[in-house]
Length: 243
Ligand code: NAP
Image (cartoon, rainbow, N blue to C red; front, side, top):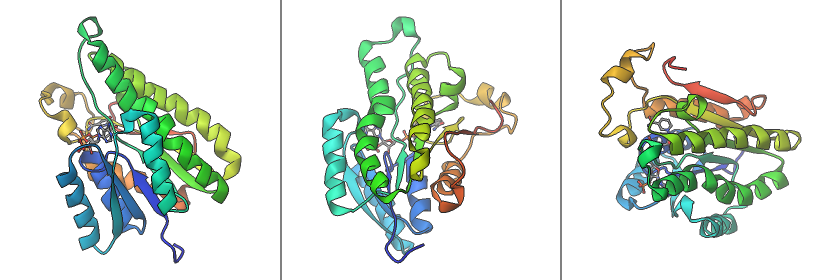
């Protein structure tokens, strides 16, 4: 890696998969911007973990679901950093309910956080990647976006939308040295699974267990690296064989 550290922004990096990705990217030499929505204490713990391991990073609080305000927050980061070389669109929520009983607010908040945010975070960063003719964009989709999950019409729609955006943007950016890929995890041990009864689901996973955030982080770090230069427009499953 060059003398000046490459910069990575990981949205939703205070907990779960985003936390593991932020720590891993810092470990392999990136300066990592740790985004979070409201859990400052958890985000500070991530930053401290990065720094204690000899890495560098900073915190950036913004709500990815806030549309133009999100872009403004990203623009502010770009006044500090000439470019953001790696973007991991990871922040996500689920609000599960059968569609028949789903509230409009749960439909909208899941779409806004998981999919609409993609536009507001990615667009300003793309400009700096284009200038540098280099970039890595990684979108956190889900097996739910690949096969549809009952009780998750909102979440499945958002995650499938991200897959479409990934494939289309990869085609737009191929000539510019910017790769765009999606990761589609199955069940990963994070707060997102709190309250779910997983016994039956695990029986249907060939590897018979949930994944660990660190396993997803290894994949993300590879896709973020220069070594992954010939992978773009792909949806890479990490799901124990369930899809
Ligand atoms: P998690 O443990 O619930 O953590 C969610 C993270 O996203 C937190 O850091 C949270 O910040 C942040 N976040 C939520 N809404 C946000 C917003 N509006 N703006 C900025 N940050 C926001 O979730 P996870 O399981 O790690 O999931 C990470 C990603 O993987 C999500 O996109 C999820 O859909 C996807 N995924 C997860 C699984 C799984 O089994 N866990 C499977 C497939 C896909 P605060 O701490 O501030 O709340």
